[in-house]
Length: 57
Image 1 (cartoon, rainbow, N blue to C red):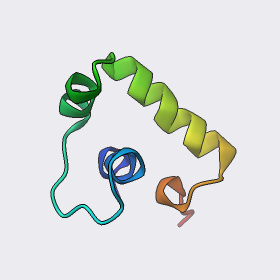
Image 2 (cartoon, rainbow, N blue to C red; image 1 turned 90 degrees about the vertical axis):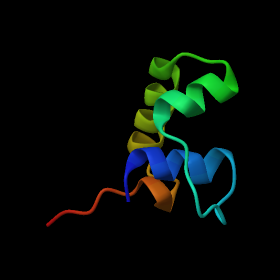
Image 3 (cartoon, helix red, strand yellow; image 1 turned 180 degrees about the horizontal axis):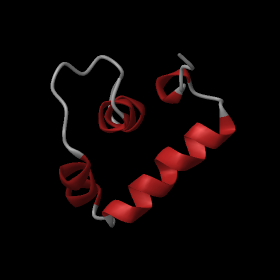
């Protein structure tokens, strides 16, 4: 799952069938894209959300 989709599901709805790109999410939320990228990194580091899990091959 891409980070853009994971963030959309986390912020808007896990039941979403259509997704906003990261730039559109930022515009909708009236924040800078870099802020959303920081949120994504925070979830990766925390390991608390399965939407942002990194799988080792």
